[in-house]
Amino acid sequence: MPHPFLEVLGMIPAELRRRPGKIRVPDVVTEREYDLVCIGSPTWWLSTNVPIRSFLQSEAASRVLKGKQFAAAVPCRRYWRHNLKTVKRLGAERGGVFIDGIHFRYQGGQVRSLLSLVSYLGSGEYRDRYLGIKIPPTNLQASHLQAAREFADALANRLLSSADTH
Ligand SMILES: Cc1cc2nc3c(=O)[nH]c(=O)nc-3n(C[C@H](O)[C@H](O)[C@H](O)COP(=O)(O)O)c2cc1C
Image (tube, rainbow, N blue to C red; front, side, top):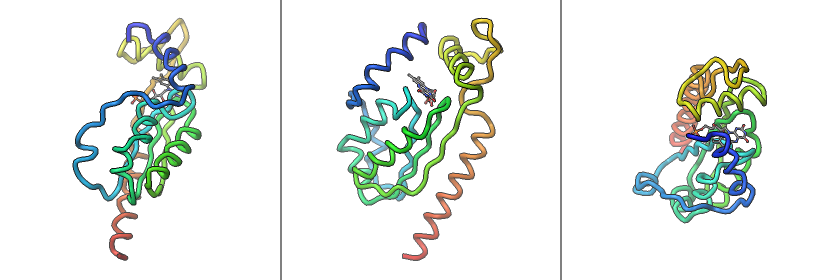
């Protein structure tokens, strides 16, 4: 991003309006039926990002989720609760059955995690310092990947054991 601060701040009006935006849903989403649907939902401005919110308010989401189990994964700097709650609510409104959720938080407190994300969005590089301040790495790290694998294993086991009992 050439102007990362402006572009990240520029999302605020769209986020606050809570209105769906124009999105394109890839064919793979609706071309077949799925036993389990996982929604990956990055937090933008404290809640669900506009593209995923828009998807969860769409006819395509009803087609995919109706009568199906779904799970959600939220990556964020710090704020995951409202986002996860929103995904759960909107997915249920589309007829999905929520089974589990996970969140991943970036390193650094409020200020350093933001500086680190903005530094990365602007440069595409992991830098040690930004605006003269020492910053931690942004984005998901190896420990998150491990947690994601364990979460996925648990979902798969749950699905297999519920299939066994039917
Ligand atoms: C426009 C924008 C707004 C963001 N707002 C927040 C926020 O309010 N709280 C938070 O914890 N993380 C926030 N983040 C960090 C994102 O949650 C994080 O970068 C995202 O989960 C990474 O997923 P992606 O690489 O698929 O975009 C924001 C990121 C962007 C780009």
